[in-house]
Structure formats: C-alpha cells, structure tokens
Length: 275
Length: 189
Ligand SMILES: Nc1ncnc2c1ncn2[C@@H]1O[C@H](COP(=O)(O)OP(=O)(O)OP(=O)(O)O)[C@@H](O)[C@H]1O
Ligand SMILES: [Mg+2]
Image 1 (cartoon, rainbow over the protein chains, first blue to last red):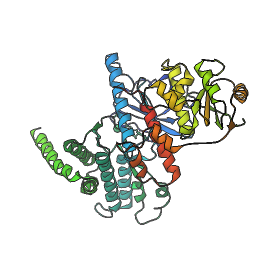
Image 2 (tube, each protein chain N blue to C red; image 1 turned 180 degrees about the vertical axis):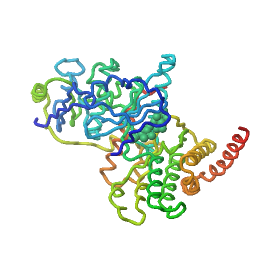
Image 3 (cartoon, rainbow over the protein chains, first blue to last red; image 1 turned 90 degrees about the vertical axis):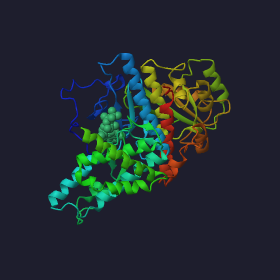
Image 4 (cartoon, protein in one colour; image 1 turned 60 degrees about the horizontal axis):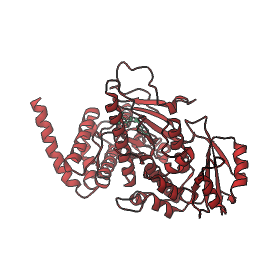
C-alpha cells in the first residue's frame, strides 16, 4: 500500500494542532492515519470492525467561525448527501467505494478503502517514467488512451446509470485501483512503466454531487475534468477526445451531452476573454 | 456451545461482544417472552439469523448500537434492542423487531451480547437456549425482500449483474448493499 504522504498544496498554511477526532476514535491504540487534509474534510486510513478490514474515514470537523447550529446542519447535510449518493451509485453498478458507517452528528463517514492512487498522481508517475526512459511525447501512448477510455466509461455509467453528476470532477477525485495481475506483469516489457496506468477507475468524493440528469450538469462535469487535465497534464488534454469518444457510446443520450459540452466550452472561452 | 465467539470491535476496545448462532431452536416463544417482560437476566440481542448476510453484517449493527450507547443516542430501550433496530433500513422500531428480531416461530437464532464475562455468558446461554450451536444459515431471498433489493431503481440487481461473476463476489455485493441501507437509516434531512 502506497500512501500519499505529502498533504495537498491547498492545505491551510497554518495547520492547527492535530485535529481532535470524534470520541470514538480517541482511545484507539493505533490512531487513524491522516492521508489528506482538504478544505472541508479530513481523510484518514483506519479499520472498520476488524483489524483486517481497512477503511477510509472522512471527517468533517466543525468550523469554529460558523454559527454552531448552522454548522451542525451543514455538516449533517454534506455527510448524508455524500453517503446517499454513494449507496445509490453502488446499487446502479457505478464504481465507487462502499459505505460502511455514517455518523452525521459527529460528522464522519467510513468508506471502503480503495487501494491505489488518484489519477493525477498516476499520470504524473507515468509521464516521469517515460521521460526517464527517453520516450518522446506522442508515441506509444496506447495505455494513456486506454485510461482515458476507462474514465469516459466510468463517467458515462455515473451519468447514465446513476443519474448523478459529481459537481467536482477532477483528476484528484478519480482513483486507479490496481488489479492484482497488473502489479506482477509488465515487468521488462518494451513499454516499461505502462502498468502504472493499469487498473480500474473508482470515482470518489461525492461531497458536491447532485441527483441530476440535465445535459447541462453532465456537460459541466466533462468540462471541469477537461480543464483539470489541461492544467495538470497538458499532454493528456490532447487525448481528451479518447475520453469523450468512450463516454459518447456509454449510454443513450451521451451524444446530446457532447453537443452541450461545445456550448459550455464556448461560454467558458467568452468568460475568460472578458477577464 | 463451543461456538460462542468473543470479539473486540475496532475503535471499541473496552466493549467485548459475544456472538452465538443456533439452529432448530425449540423455545423461541419463551426467549421472546423474556425480552417482552424486560427480564434483566436476558440482556441479549436475539436476531432472526436467516436475514443475516455475514459476520460483518451483524458486527456492523453492533458497532452502530454501541456507538449510539456511548454517545447517549439510543433510540430504543437498550443497547441490545438497538442492535436489532440497527439492522433496519427504516425508522420503524416495532417493525424492525418483527423483521430482524426473534419471533415465536424463529428456529435460526443469532445471539449477540454486549459486555459481560465470556464464561458467564456462555454458561447462561447454555441453560437458556434450546437449540444446536452452528456455523451459518443465510436466506438470500429473504434478505433481498427485507432490504427491498428487488424493487425498482436497480434495487441492487443491476449492480449484481455488472461484472459480478462468482458467488463470493455476489455475497460481498449483497453485504455492501445491506450495509449501505443500514448506514443511511435515520437520514432525514
Ligand atoms: N475510499 C478511499 N480510499 C482510499 N483513499 C481515499 C478514499 N477516499 C478518498 N481518498 C483519498 O483522500 C483524498 C481526499 O478525499 P476526498 O476527495 O473524498 O476529500 P476532499 O476533497 O477533502 O473532500 P470534499 O471535497 O468532499 O470536501 C483523495 O484524493 C484520495 O487520495
Ligand atoms: Mg477531493
């Protein structure tokens, strides 16, 4: 298991003394291990019920600057809406972590632990390895294309099957869970390093998700992801058409969304021209 | 009765729980009566074992109930009735007892006891339950019915059809649906 040690860049510069977890976790002999500290939520790795069952603990601590009643209500709402969406996704066959337990009053939810890493990290790793091997850009990009296709299909499944939009679809909210075989083969092949992009896409972070089948919301999901690829991986942005191609055939109505995407892009361009 | 299992759940190290499973129980009416009468010698969760998918399933219910106990948020009489209620996908306490709890006709019985010494619990159960202690006895059809996994909106069926190939994976998905339904119970806002 590889754990992302460094906190994300957007972490508050003055991080307060270690967050006090809810009482149930305070007496743990092996305390939950912090993985990331986002703007709203803290993510820990710990265990559920048995020492052999790893889980992700997502904790939304109370915000001292908010009115306590409002704060409790907002936290409760976010926790429950995320858990509901995950349960719905799972029932519809959308690849997301299972929900193990919810305590909306204390502000936490426990989810199935997803092995692997977020797509952003994996793509970076792949690009770095290729550079080290001296592989030029634009050649032997089949695995990257393959990854884009899998992402497109997973999003299609969420939009079409789940009737949901993610609201915050970035390369940090998509994980790549290695399949067991992927970690063994690939060694010594001509495309050494390609196994980095192997595995199954798992959608995480439904904190801003909504129940929606509107083409506009779906197109915005795709647009946000396109921009995310553009800013973190300009090279992958060029292959975004692979993702859209796979998305387009993944459910009835996907093509209408792709049309809408063009409109959303136009608006985005106009807005940035106006400054 | 060698099959009594004692577990310390993660994050609840000071609260042991004892679990035991029986087949061909002959005195369910008596056991149910002790609960209804509030007999304090019978502080147990008596569960209809045929709707329990796995060990994780029942441990999840115990975890939720003990968490509610420690944070003074029990919704039912005590931690043992709360375990039965924790199995429910909805907020109807009486209904949860009928569906998941012991009834006069229960033959497959799962017993959960929170706290207490292992030997003492074992001895008491030996005298109290007339039945054979065993391994497992799931009725998948019944589980699907009580958790409404066959009705509209996919109901878990799509999920199961989607790339789930073997029985073990199918059991695992069933477990996931059930845990999700339990976790969301009481979510009204
Ligand atoms: N189920 C999981 N298994 C393993 N790692 C996870 C899981 N969920 C999240 N992570 C890791 O934790 C990070 C943060 O999680 P997440 O995106 O859900 O939180 P967030 O962005 O801080 O929350 P929010 O945007 O809802 O306030 C992810 O980028 C990922 O690295
Ligand atoms: Mg996130």
